[in-house]
Length: 419
Ligand SMILES: CC(=O)N[C@H]1[C@@H](OP(=O)(O)OP(=O)(O)OC[C@H]2O[C@@H](n3ccc(=O)[nH]c3=O)[C@H](O)[C@@H]2O)O[C@H](CO)[C@@H](O)[C@@H]1O
Ligand SMILES: C=C(OP(=O)(O)O)C(=O)O
Image (cartoon, rainbow, N blue to C red; front, top):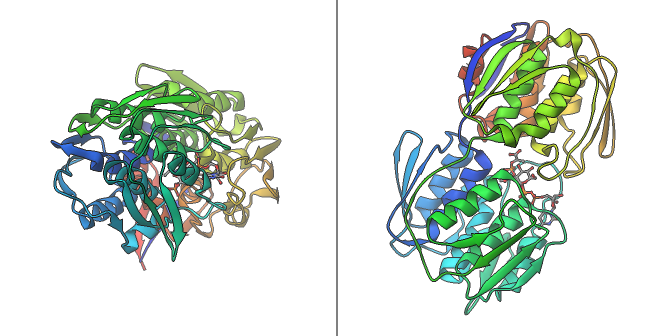
């Protein structure tokens, strides 16, 4: 087993290269299984455990993957199995995209129910509503979801909630349906746009991704293509916040500054300097000058829920009272108990957390209760006085490539130890 050991106190200086986006890559890889002609060559795939899990799932149903660094070549031209039932499917959230991809291509899919971070109830009713509107019969039994159709016919679907997963999943299936599908009240996250762009590069006809209405004209088949995954908005946000919390000056490289606007604006409100270049941001911070702010997590372009936990660490040392309203997930404050062990002053009531800024945190033994909670604990360890040990770090590796090396290169005292 492994734990992270951090000695806090170092300011961060230098450059950090952001990897491909987790939540785009984990949708694009299943989407590549819809291609019946040619190979898909996909660059900038992040080296994270969710991707490794997905690789094993893809191979278990007959897809072939060749890797060259972060470039994956996917060959799905042979007939695939439409049943995905391995342990890996239950470990990660994004395995649910196999339903949309296989239903689209084969009009049949049976996939074990997904896992992912325990951050609240994670229903699939909107995915099911979309598949059913396209003509599929969907059942959930014995821990798996089965979707079958004689044929898929385009439909108008108005989602009851703004959901990344159901927007992408139904878009996948509708890509190979007959006629036009109109999806309304859809998620506008950069990864939704990236998946639509990938599908279009493979021959799909999708318009409107990035707005709240997506129009899809079904096509008969998809062909291979070359594509590069967008940079990870959440990984970039995590390094921006870490720099703001530790102090120093760091260039966050290989990003799309537009995707970072809600985070940049909040950091500036706190007194952090954010300089925008073409594909990078320079963060300069003096932590003793940080001011309290309030955030409410919202679908894009609002403040991302996936950055809320790292952000709470920054708020814990900002002068004054900060308030977080977590509007997406009802259990995304589990890390607060760990943060309290390090001296943070936090009161959690339902979906609200109130933080009274303290001058410093102190090192402690803590757990990564989920993926972004783990990133939050790393930032807390980096700013705390003394030694912090973080257990259950497997959660962190689901979404952060080389986190230890990336922070080491910026001057942090962080290492992995076996126990
Ligand atoms: C692999 C992946 O991309 N994960 C992201 C994805 O998760 P995921 O796709 O699971 O999250 P959704 O956007 O679907 O969920 C948003 C909200 O809609 C609700 N909901 C969702 C589906 C449904 O059928 N019914 C329903 O009520 C959820 O309970 C939640 O309150 O988007 C979340 C919100 O940005 C992020 O935190 C996750 O990092
Ligand atoms: C919640 C997250 O991931 P998942 O949906 O894969 O659990 C996340 O990336 O913050």
